[in-house]
Length: 186
Image 1 (tube, rainbow, N blue to C red):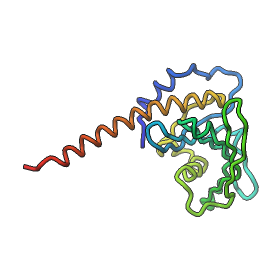
Image 2 (tube, rainbow, N blue to C red):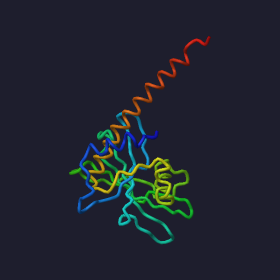
Image 3 (cartoon, helix red, strand yellow):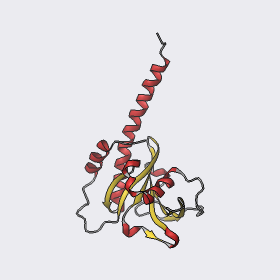
Image 4 (cartoon, rainbow, N blue to C red):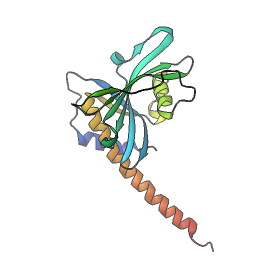
């Protein structure tokens, strides 16, 4: 589902003070993928800060992608270390940690670190985020800015609010379309 930047940007700007003047920033974050349903959405957020993207042997690039949960009963955040090989169009999860909250514990998540043969959509977007940076906005990726991680989570929660409104609107329009489809034709 695509969210119009026309609705998203004002909501993000109103929900937290701008941190652009902050001396220290933890990352330059982009929402690269979202999925789920109203009240139970997930957003995958990549860190584009060059200081947090590392190049490894063989042209492999490593970056951080965070899965933020709308429903905190599912967890607070999962931090992934993703490796991308642009030349071979491959992606894999090198490591994942579940973070229980700002002051909570960290637990490693069991994952397969093999190169993915059929990667999920968020992994494909992670690969494209690194391999095709000029197409980020064209692919529906949303820049949320340079900020500390806790502010990034606040920004994603604001995104969930906008996303929830869009999902509710889409559900109403679908009901109207279904009602028209059931009407007898003249």
